[in-house]
Length: 306
Image (cartoon, rainbow, N blue to C red; front, side, top):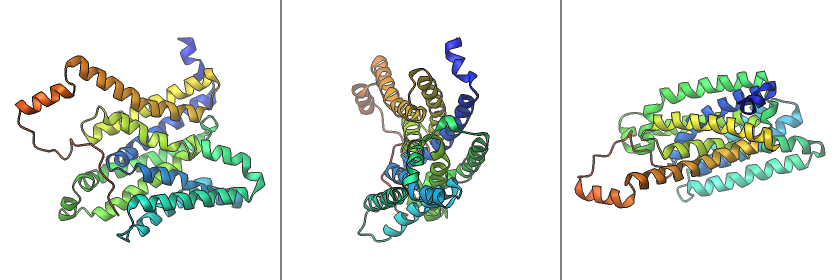
């Protein structure tokens, strides 16, 4: 057992585990809605869209977290503005903002020769450099995200699966979408210092996707996604300790592989229990179809316009 616990003897690994776990929980809660609503591409664009704000904040000596949040918010606002033109799809708007923000960030970075080293940390993160102050910020962000997710859960659920009903119930689907964009912005901006702008997308999407294989409700997916994310952080740190690999990249890789592991295990259990596709077809032919349930239906849907 000593070989298993030996990495925790280092204080920087302990801080990395705590900070990474907080990021995993925040990303899992927000990422569940991103996956369910089919907003993965937007999450990817926002994670890359952090670069201009981070670059400007670094050059001006400002707070990197504030710069990242402003840049991500600008990306989300740009997507919403472009999609007001019904001739432009949301995917097209996201692609345009993706290129604009990433290119702008690279141009700003390239204009400052002394910024090359910081660029690597920005893109790939440095989870082993997490300090106590970073953990406090992540904890505060986590509380805000959890509180908002609880308060707006019903509105998020209705807007995700039945926008028309949400509007008829007075749940303000447009406002709900803006709140969700705000939570995505907060999660991405708070997480980039741990796993970097290129790798935060892994924790935002992979654990909820892996949990979606097992969960039958949004809340279940959030809980399972959080557990899978925390496990990915712990496993990634442990592997990087003994394999001498980049900790952030290893965490992201383990997180992404968790989906494939979940899918393979689920498929194997279906075959072993005789609940595979053939058995499902036979049962469907013999039994009447159940009434659809808003809460139980967690399949990803096409993205909704703001």
